[in-house]
Length: 369
Image (cartoon, rainbow, N blue to C red; front, side, top):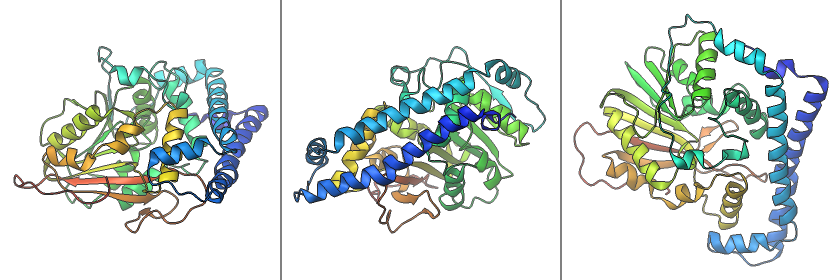
């Protein structure tokens, strides 16, 4: 498979490096300066709404806000130009992708896409992730820069797989909801080599790229286009259901339905694990996350932070519910909290739950909301 970054011209690479450097400066230099200005004000907010009001009143905030939005637009323009200038070659690659690993690709051209999915250019990627055959290539390229090149080789997803997922001797089926272009699904095949691994997503372009890359790497994965709220898979057929950065991109009711579908799919004793984001409890820090979501066309962060997802899991019949902080740099799951960090970063966390072997009484969930 062609990696577009191996094909970049000097001008394209310089452009990409400039955007990466700008993003790093925004995170590691501008954000700490914003925090210092807020601290110098001497008045600590007790709620996110109060902190948001304070944030918007800081003299540095217009620059911080503008810089984030602008570099995100620059990122997608650079990624789009690099991909679309190679459309013919990349299209041919998808059409002639090698087969032989034993995986499969099942697309559903008639699948209705929910309005909450199509109404926004998520991450302000023009056309979003589903609208064009090249959308997945654009997102794959852009996501490397968004993660500051720290997720190259799918480091975050490998950490999630190795530190957050349970030992499942004899696991027969693992499902990844919202698998995108497969960066979260492929590590699952390494973690559970004897299990059938299934990736589910709404976007056909992402699934087509995921399948082509998995086959090229010799990894057998079944990719299927379906709604994560109604996968079409058999009840009680899965040992593990996962999702990575998908719940925060749907409204609260869709979250509820997705978690209920995950519970339906699990066998008794099966595990649910979603890598997501959670409020940290620091009103100012959490206000910057909400403001990021607004600028990045991710309106449902409000729903994730404002929903009792543990109660949703409990309503779906799951037990042992919890949120656990996750350090994407090196530690993975971190039960003692996120730790002190000066740069702007996502508050990663893992949602965990279990399908009981027998119907459970009204057990209370534990952990952060």
